[in-house]
Image (cartoon, one colour):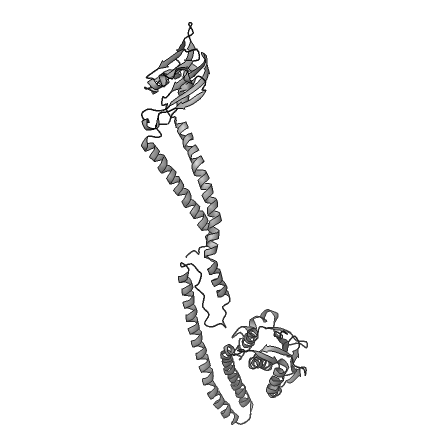
Length: 458
């Protein structure tokens, strides 16, 4: 059983993935830089003169004659063992000096020229720099022997903790600000870029929402959408084209079948009329009439797309009078009275008169066919504008009042009706921008109401 992936936000996913990629690239770049520095010996050239100065500072003292001496402290012994090339030069303001190791002649000759300097780093001339000649560190400190000046250029051992601290500072000082800046730019720029790129797709989605069953030949626009989405829109357009072709074939089949049925139905009615009167003849004539109604309803389905182009002013009172005159004989023969309540002044809407007549005819025929063969069927035109058809039958259950307008739906399974009449009414009314509803009639039964839009006065 396959699992369906949940929808996701493309903007958020792109932002997080871009940020992750940038962070990975930044970390890899820093690692490459650090590796390159280590390979070039830069990290090994890291100085720790301050540690040497601190050890010498704690080891300095004076003898009885006032000369500077170095006490053999455990720290100094360890420093000597770790640093074979250890050298330092100590000098006080009185001119006493003390040195250990191979002090470079350039630093040994400084003398009292830097007595007023508290600390400094002493380097070499630009064109004479030699990586094997490290710069010296000068610092004036207080010791047991008084205030002295210590110069050293000894490379101290870089401890693991200091290396980790130095690397952390490098990352925090370089990588973290860069990552924060890129992340901020990513979360601001990515949604803007995606939104602009998908602006055309939003327009295409709006076009898709406006497509309905009555709109043939509709296609989605591929202008202004990303190239990656064009195949999807093209596939949808191809599917719409196939649906149009299938719908056209279906319409032709239904229309041809309905037209072909009209001739044999007419021949059947002619032959039934020649039979001797009796209950069998009456039932056969009713069955033939229902068959003829079904054929006309199938043709009405095909006429739907052709009605309303262009719409004109339609007098609903005149439509009701025409339908009442046509169906009065059928209603009276079935045992009903047909009552018409329409004002003499026109009640107009914009639409197709023939389509509205078919819708009203279907409502009246539905009342005749499914009623109790007694009582009154009423047609009432009001200024809403609307047309109501009422009967005195059993009515429509409240839980089925929406379903009865679906095609081929019937209240009772054994009903001989095809279930197309009310669906046809709804489609015609929707095509005119109105709506149809059913409620309880004033004298029992059902009340079907077609509400249509009024004519707008300019």
